[in-house]
Amino acid sequence: MSSRISLTQYLVEQQRQNNSIPPQLRLLIEVVARACKRIAISVNKGALGDVLGSADSENVQGEVQKKLDIIANEVLIEANEWGGHLAAMGSEEMDSIHLVPNRFPQGEYLLLFDPLDGSSNIDVNVSIGTIFSVLRKVNNHRGVSEEDFLQPGKQQAAAGYCIYGPQTTLVLTVGDGVAMFTLDREMGSWVLTEDNVRIPADTKEFAINMSNLRHWAPPVKRYIDECLAGTTGPREKDFNMRWIASMVADVHRILCRGGIFMYPWDAREPQKAGKLRLMYEANPMGFIVEQAGGLATNGKQRILDITPTKLHERVAVVLGSKNEVERVTRYHLEQGD
Ligand code: AHM
Ligand code: MG
Picture (cartoon, rainbow, N blue to C red):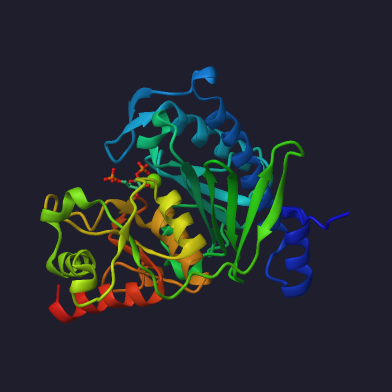
Protein backbone atom coordinates (compact mmCIF):
# COMPACT_ATOMS: atom_id res chain seq x y z
CA MET A 1 0.00 0.00 0.00
CA SER A 2 1.42 3.40 -0.93
CA SER A 3 1.95 5.60 2.10
CA ARG A 4 -0.38 8.57 2.12
CA ILE A 5 0.15 11.07 4.88
CA SER A 6 -3.00 12.81 6.04
CA LEU A 7 -3.13 16.31 7.49
CA THR A 8 -3.79 14.80 10.94
CA GLN A 9 -0.78 12.51 10.70
CA TYR A 10 1.40 15.37 9.47
CA LEU A 11 0.36 17.57 12.39
CA VAL A 12 0.87 14.78 14.95
CA GLU A 13 4.33 14.05 13.54
CA GLN A 14 5.29 17.74 13.59
CA GLN A 15 4.16 17.88 17.19
CA ARG A 16 6.27 14.86 18.12
CA GLN A 17 9.39 15.74 16.15
CA ASN A 18 9.62 19.49 16.47
CA ASN A 19 7.23 20.30 19.27
CA SER A 20 6.09 23.09 16.94
CA ILE A 21 2.36 22.47 17.23
CA PRO A 22 0.71 22.65 20.65
CA PRO A 23 -2.57 20.67 20.89
CA GLN A 24 -4.82 23.79 20.70
CA LEU A 25 -3.05 24.91 17.53
CA ARG A 26 -3.42 21.46 16.01
CA LEU A 27 -7.15 21.50 16.72
CA LEU A 28 -7.40 25.00 15.26
CA ILE A 29 -5.70 23.97 12.01
CA GLU A 30 -7.87 20.85 11.69
CA VAL A 31 -11.04 22.89 12.29
CA VAL A 32 -10.04 25.50 9.69
CA ALA A 33 -9.18 22.72 7.23
CA ARG A 34 -12.61 21.13 7.81
CA ALA A 35 -14.31 24.50 7.28
CA CYS A 36 -12.41 24.85 3.99
CA LYS A 37 -13.84 21.49 2.89
CA ARG A 38 -17.34 22.85 3.51
CA ILE A 39 -16.54 26.04 1.61
CA ALA A 40 -15.12 23.94 -1.24
CA ILE A 41 -18.43 22.07 -1.50
CA SER A 42 -20.39 25.34 -1.83
CA VAL A 43 -17.89 26.80 -4.32
CA ASN A 44 -18.16 23.61 -6.36
CA LYS A 45 -21.96 23.62 -6.45
CA GLY A 46 -21.98 27.12 -7.94
CA ALA A 47 -25.26 27.92 -9.66
CA LEU A 48 -26.70 24.54 -8.58
CA GLY A 49 -26.38 25.61 -4.95
CA ASP A 50 -27.77 29.11 -5.54
CA VAL A 51 -24.55 30.56 -4.12
CA LEU A 52 -23.46 32.81 -7.00
CA GLY A 53 -24.08 36.53 -7.34
CA SER A 54 -24.18 39.49 -5.06
CA ALA A 55 -25.57 39.52 -1.53
CA ASP A 56 -26.69 43.16 -1.91
CA SER A 57 -24.59 44.24 1.07
CA GLU A 58 -21.24 45.98 1.60
CA ASN A 59 -18.36 45.12 3.92
CA VAL A 60 -16.44 47.61 6.05
CA GLN A 61 -14.10 48.35 3.12
CA GLY A 62 -17.07 49.49 1.01
CA GLU A 63 -16.87 46.44 -1.28
CA VAL A 64 -20.05 44.73 -2.46
CA GLN A 65 -20.26 41.32 -0.81
CA LYS A 66 -20.93 38.20 -2.84
CA LYS A 67 -23.19 35.47 -1.42
CA LEU A 68 -20.18 33.18 -1.14
CA ASP A 69 -18.19 35.82 0.81
CA ILE A 70 -20.89 35.71 3.47
CA ILE A 71 -21.38 31.92 3.38
CA ALA A 72 -17.63 31.30 3.75
CA ASN A 73 -17.42 33.79 6.62
CA GLU A 74 -20.29 32.07 8.46
CA VAL A 75 -18.80 28.62 7.91
CA LEU A 76 -15.46 29.70 9.41
CA ILE A 77 -17.09 31.37 12.41
CA GLU A 78 -19.43 28.47 13.22
CA ALA A 79 -16.66 25.92 12.85
CA ASN A 80 -14.27 27.79 15.15
CA GLU A 81 -16.51 29.01 17.98
CA TRP A 82 -16.99 25.94 20.10
CA GLY A 83 -13.63 24.11 20.20
CA GLY A 84 -12.00 26.01 23.07
CA HIS A 85 -8.93 26.85 20.97
CA LEU A 86 -9.80 30.45 20.14
CA ALA A 87 -10.34 33.71 21.97
CA ALA A 88 -11.59 35.76 19.00
CA MET A 89 -11.69 36.05 15.22
CA GLY A 90 -11.24 38.88 12.74
CA SER A 91 -12.40 38.78 9.12
CA GLU A 92 -12.33 40.85 5.94
CA GLU A 93 -16.11 40.55 5.96
CA MET A 94 -16.73 41.82 9.53
CA ASP A 95 -16.30 45.41 10.73
CA SER A 96 -14.98 44.42 14.15
CA ILE A 97 -13.63 41.33 15.86
CA HIS A 98 -15.91 38.41 16.75
CA LEU A 99 -15.52 37.14 20.31
CA VAL A 100 -15.99 33.48 21.19
CA PRO A 101 -19.40 33.43 22.96
CA ASN A 102 -19.34 33.04 26.75
CA ARG A 103 -21.03 29.64 26.62
CA PHE A 104 -17.85 28.17 25.10
CA PRO A 105 -14.42 27.89 26.73
CA GLN A 106 -11.92 30.47 25.56
CA GLY A 107 -8.61 29.41 24.03
CA GLU A 108 -5.26 31.08 23.61
CA TYR A 109 -5.31 31.82 19.88
CA LEU A 110 -6.63 34.58 17.63
CA LEU A 111 -7.71 33.75 14.10
CA LEU A 112 -7.85 36.16 11.15
CA PHE A 113 -9.19 35.32 7.72
CA ASP A 114 -10.19 36.48 4.30
CA PRO A 115 -13.01 33.94 3.90
CA LEU A 116 -13.12 34.10 0.11
CA ASP A 117 -10.27 35.86 -1.61
CA GLY A 118 -10.61 36.82 -5.25
CA SER A 119 -14.34 37.55 -4.96
CA SER A 120 -14.49 39.03 -8.47
CA ASN A 121 -13.70 35.54 -9.80
CA ILE A 122 -16.49 33.67 -7.98
CA ASP A 123 -19.16 34.08 -10.65
CA VAL A 124 -16.83 33.39 -13.57
CA ASN A 125 -15.54 30.01 -12.35
CA VAL A 126 -11.93 31.08 -11.82
CA SER A 127 -9.79 29.97 -8.85
CA ILE A 128 -10.52 31.62 -5.51
CA GLY A 129 -9.37 30.85 -1.98
CA THR A 130 -9.52 31.23 1.80
CA ILE A 131 -6.56 32.86 3.59
CA PHE A 132 -5.94 32.56 7.34
CA SER A 133 -3.48 33.79 9.95
CA VAL A 134 -3.08 32.59 13.55
CA LEU A 135 -1.74 34.71 16.39
CA ARG A 136 -1.33 33.97 20.09
CA LYS A 137 -3.34 36.03 22.54
CA VAL A 138 -0.54 37.74 24.39
CA ASN A 139 -2.55 39.11 27.33
CA ASN A 140 -3.86 36.48 29.69
CA HIS A 141 -6.94 38.30 30.94
CA ARG A 142 -10.28 36.97 29.71
CA GLY A 143 -11.34 40.00 27.68
CA VAL A 144 -10.16 40.39 24.11
CA SER A 145 -10.04 43.60 22.11
CA GLU A 146 -8.90 44.60 18.64
CA GLU A 147 -5.61 45.68 20.24
CA ASP A 148 -4.74 42.04 20.98
CA PHE A 149 -4.70 41.43 17.22
CA LEU A 150 -2.33 44.29 16.41
CA GLN A 151 0.84 42.20 16.40
CA PRO A 152 3.45 42.20 13.63
CA GLY A 153 3.21 39.28 11.22
CA LYS A 154 6.47 37.77 12.44
CA GLN A 155 4.53 36.71 15.56
CA GLN A 156 2.14 34.47 13.60
CA ALA A 157 1.95 30.94 15.02
CA ALA A 158 0.62 29.54 11.74
CA ALA A 159 -0.71 30.70 8.40
CA GLY A 160 -2.25 29.11 5.38
CA TYR A 161 -4.61 29.26 2.50
CA CYS A 162 -6.92 26.94 0.66
CA ILE A 163 -7.20 27.31 -3.11
CA TYR A 164 -10.47 26.26 -4.77
CA GLY A 165 -9.20 25.56 -8.27
CA PRO A 166 -8.98 22.55 -10.58
CA GLN A 167 -7.78 20.86 -7.38
CA THR A 168 -8.60 21.95 -3.85
CA THR A 169 -5.29 22.44 -2.06
CA LEU A 170 -4.49 23.51 1.47
CA VAL A 171 -1.12 25.21 1.98
CA LEU A 172 0.18 25.50 5.51
CA THR A 173 3.08 26.77 7.58
CA VAL A 174 3.61 26.55 11.32
CA GLY A 175 7.01 28.23 10.98
CA ASP A 176 8.84 25.10 9.95
CA GLY A 177 8.62 25.15 6.14
CA VAL A 178 5.58 24.94 3.88
CA ALA A 179 3.48 21.86 3.15
CA MET A 180 0.68 21.32 0.61
CA PHE A 181 -2.30 18.98 1.06
CA THR A 182 -4.65 18.04 -1.75
CA LEU A 183 -8.28 17.25 -0.96
CA ASP A 184 -9.15 13.66 -1.83
CA ARG A 185 -12.86 14.11 -2.46
CA GLU A 186 -13.70 10.38 -2.38
CA MET A 187 -12.04 9.94 0.99
CA GLY A 188 -12.93 13.41 2.24
CA SER A 189 -9.39 13.83 3.55
CA TRP A 190 -6.42 16.13 3.06
CA VAL A 191 -3.41 14.24 1.71
CA LEU A 192 0.16 15.59 1.90
CA THR A 193 1.25 16.11 -1.71
CA GLU A 194 4.24 18.47 -1.31
CA ASP A 195 6.54 19.05 1.64
CA ASN A 196 9.36 21.59 2.03
CA VAL A 197 8.03 23.78 -0.77
CA ARG A 198 10.77 26.08 -2.13
CA ILE A 199 10.35 29.16 -4.34
CA PRO A 200 13.18 29.55 -6.89
CA ALA A 201 15.23 32.70 -6.17
CA ASP A 202 15.09 33.82 -9.82
CA THR A 203 12.15 34.09 -12.16
CA LYS A 204 11.02 35.38 -15.56
CA GLU A 205 7.38 35.80 -14.59
CA PHE A 206 5.65 38.78 -12.97
CA ALA A 207 2.09 39.34 -11.75
CA ILE A 208 0.66 42.85 -11.50
CA ASN A 209 -2.53 44.55 -12.64
CA MET A 210 -1.05 46.35 -15.69
CA SER A 211 -4.15 48.49 -16.16
CA ASN A 212 -2.98 50.58 -13.19
CA LEU A 213 0.41 51.32 -14.78
CA ARG A 214 -0.07 55.06 -15.14
CA HIS A 215 -0.82 55.42 -11.41
CA TRP A 216 2.26 53.60 -10.05
CA ALA A 217 5.23 55.18 -8.25
CA PRO A 218 8.49 55.48 -10.29
CA PRO A 219 10.28 52.44 -8.73
CA VAL A 220 7.43 50.10 -9.74
CA LYS A 221 7.27 51.62 -13.25
CA ARG A 222 11.03 51.22 -13.57
CA TYR A 223 10.92 47.55 -12.58
CA ILE A 224 8.06 46.69 -14.96
CA ASP A 225 9.52 48.77 -17.82
CA GLU A 226 12.75 46.79 -17.49
CA CYS A 227 10.86 43.48 -17.54
CA LEU A 228 8.88 44.57 -20.62
CA ALA A 229 12.08 45.59 -22.44
CA GLY A 230 13.01 41.90 -22.47
CA THR A 231 16.21 40.73 -24.14
CA THR A 232 16.97 44.21 -25.49
CA GLY A 233 16.67 45.90 -22.08
CA PRO A 234 18.88 45.93 -18.95
CA ARG A 235 17.53 42.57 -17.75
CA GLU A 236 18.61 40.89 -21.00
CA LYS A 237 15.83 38.33 -20.84
CA ASP A 238 12.17 38.11 -21.80
CA PHE A 239 9.54 38.06 -19.05
CA ASN A 240 6.11 36.49 -19.02
CA MET A 241 3.08 38.02 -17.29
CA ARG A 242 0.19 36.42 -15.35
CA TRP A 243 -2.62 38.13 -13.43
CA ILE A 244 -5.45 36.00 -12.07
CA ALA A 245 -6.94 38.68 -9.75
CA SER A 246 -7.09 36.13 -6.95
CA MET A 247 -4.07 36.65 -4.72
CA VAL A 248 -4.38 33.05 -3.57
CA ALA A 249 -4.06 31.75 -7.13
CA ASP A 250 -1.19 34.10 -8.04
CA VAL A 251 0.71 33.20 -4.85
CA HIS A 252 0.03 29.50 -5.41
CA ARG A 253 1.60 29.67 -8.87
CA ILE A 254 4.64 31.42 -7.34
CA LEU A 255 4.99 28.66 -4.72
CA CYS A 256 4.81 26.06 -7.49
CA ARG A 257 7.22 27.60 -10.04
CA GLY A 258 8.48 30.99 -8.83
CA GLY A 259 7.54 34.52 -9.83
CA ILE A 260 6.89 37.92 -8.35
CA PHE A 261 3.50 39.33 -7.29
CA MET A 262 2.89 43.02 -6.73
CA TYR A 263 -0.07 45.08 -5.63
CA PRO A 264 1.64 48.45 -5.15
CA TRP A 265 0.49 51.80 -3.84
CA ASP A 266 -1.08 53.89 -6.58
CA ALA A 267 -1.74 57.60 -7.02
CA ARG A 268 -5.53 57.41 -7.33
CA GLU A 269 -5.99 57.11 -3.57
CA PRO A 270 -2.64 58.33 -2.21
CA GLN A 271 -3.74 58.06 1.42
CA LYS A 272 -4.20 54.27 1.01
CA ALA A 273 -0.99 52.27 1.39
CA GLY A 274 -2.30 49.70 -1.10
CA LYS A 275 -5.36 47.62 -1.91
CA LEU A 276 -4.59 44.45 0.02
CA ARG A 277 -5.09 44.07 3.74
CA LEU A 278 -2.12 43.54 6.04
CA MET A 279 -3.50 41.25 8.71
CA TYR A 280 -5.41 38.61 6.76
CA GLU A 281 -3.89 38.83 3.26
CA ALA A 282 -0.31 40.15 3.27
CA ASN A 283 0.83 38.73 6.63
CA PRO A 284 -0.21 35.11 6.10
CA MET A 285 1.03 35.15 2.49
CA GLY A 286 4.26 36.84 3.60
CA PHE A 287 4.83 34.17 6.27
CA ILE A 288 4.22 31.35 3.78
CA VAL A 289 6.43 32.92 1.09
CA GLU A 290 9.31 33.51 3.53
CA GLN A 291 9.00 29.96 4.86
CA ALA A 292 9.39 28.77 1.26
CA GLY A 293 12.59 30.82 0.78
CA GLY A 294 11.01 33.87 -0.86
CA LEU A 295 10.60 37.44 0.37
CA ALA A 296 7.67 39.77 1.06
CA THR A 297 8.00 43.55 1.43
CA ASN A 298 5.86 46.64 1.04
CA GLY A 299 8.52 48.00 -1.32
CA LYS A 300 10.67 49.31 1.51
CA GLN A 301 10.18 47.14 4.55
CA ARG A 302 9.63 43.48 5.36
CA ILE A 303 5.86 42.92 5.61
CA LEU A 304 6.22 40.73 8.71
CA ASP A 305 7.97 43.56 10.62
CA ILE A 306 5.07 46.02 10.25
CA THR A 307 3.11 46.61 13.46
CA PRO A 308 -0.54 47.09 12.44
CA THR A 309 -2.47 50.04 13.81
CA LYS A 310 -5.93 48.75 12.89
CA LEU A 311 -7.65 45.52 11.95
CA HIS A 312 -8.38 46.37 8.32
CA GLU A 313 -5.11 48.18 7.60
CA ARG A 314 -3.99 48.14 3.98
CA VAL A 315 -0.49 47.63 2.69
CA ALA A 316 1.46 47.62 -0.58
CA VAL A 317 2.66 44.11 -1.42
CA VAL A 318 5.72 42.83 -3.28
CA LEU A 319 6.34 39.12 -2.77
CA GLY A 320 7.81 36.01 -4.34
CA SER A 321 11.19 35.02 -5.76
CA LYS A 322 13.93 36.42 -3.53
CA ASN A 323 16.15 38.14 -6.10
CA GLU A 324 13.26 39.92 -7.83
CA VAL A 325 11.70 41.17 -4.57
CA GLU A 326 15.13 42.40 -3.48
CA ARG A 327 15.47 44.28 -6.77
CA VAL A 328 12.07 46.02 -6.48
CA THR A 329 12.82 46.91 -2.86
CA ARG A 330 16.23 48.30 -3.84
CA TYR A 331 14.59 50.46 -6.55
CA HIS A 332 12.28 51.96 -3.91
CA LEU A 333 15.12 52.60 -1.47
CA GLU A 334 17.39 54.11 -4.19
CA GLN A 335 14.71 56.57 -5.28
CA GLY A 336 13.66 57.34 -1.72
CA ASP A 337 10.09 56.64 -2.79
P1 AHM B 1 -10.90 40.50 -2.32
O1 AHM B 1 -10.34 39.99 -1.03
O2 AHM B 1 -12.05 41.44 -2.09
O3 AHM B 1 -11.22 39.42 -3.29
O4 AHM B 1 -9.76 41.46 -2.98
C1 AHM B 1 -8.45 41.04 -3.07
C2 AHM B 1 -8.10 40.65 -4.48
C3 AHM B 1 -6.82 39.86 -4.55
O5 AHM B 1 -7.09 38.50 -4.42
C4 AHM B 1 -6.30 40.20 -5.93
O6 AHM B 1 -4.91 40.09 -6.03
C5 AHM B 1 -6.76 41.60 -6.11
O7 AHM B 1 -7.86 41.79 -5.24
C6 AHM B 1 -7.20 41.86 -7.52
O8 AHM B 1 -7.47 43.21 -7.65
P2 AHM B 1 -7.83 43.87 -9.08
O9 AHM B 1 -9.25 43.51 -9.34
O10 AHM B 1 -7.66 45.35 -8.79
O11 AHM B 1 -6.89 43.34 -10.10
MG1 MG C 1 -8.92 39.13 -0.34
